[in-house]
Length: 201
Image 1 (tube, helix red, strand yellow):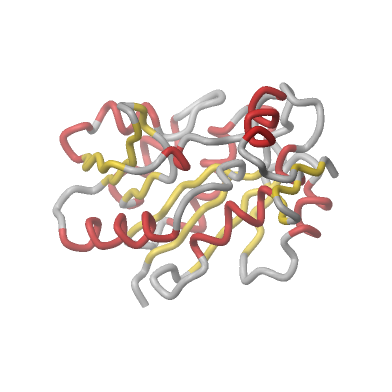
Image 2: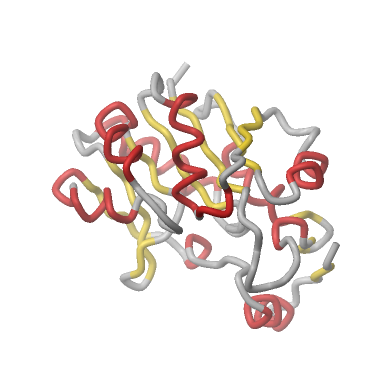
């Protein structure tokens, strides 16, 4: 066991789109499936998926994956509530990935690279960057930052912790997949222009 886990944050209500973006299909596969799959390899011991909004529909879409569901009843409080919902589950792991459920274009080779750096470097947080923009997933050593994670509020993830402990962070170059999400109709239209087949569930 590598004592690494992944937390997929999948409880948001997709307010800007007006429908559940995690269930949009890109070339016949849902966004949430695509966001989980890069973590399905031996270096990750456990995958947790935090659900909230339309949890039954999301769970059904991923019921055949080897995951553990975490329910977040406070999902309307923003991303921070999903992070905090996972803390009890991850506290004993040496490393935990935090990934957004609407990042369907992250490459498994990036995950492997992040794990290698995490295991061979004394830095405690790994963050991918594309064109000077920080993206996801973030790999963090939970035991060092649990207190900080318990205090975050609102619709933020680990940004505050990354900024606070910058000296403990390794920033690595990555492709645009770390930034590509589905937040607006424009995002969906841009995918169509790239010849992806998009189906709204």
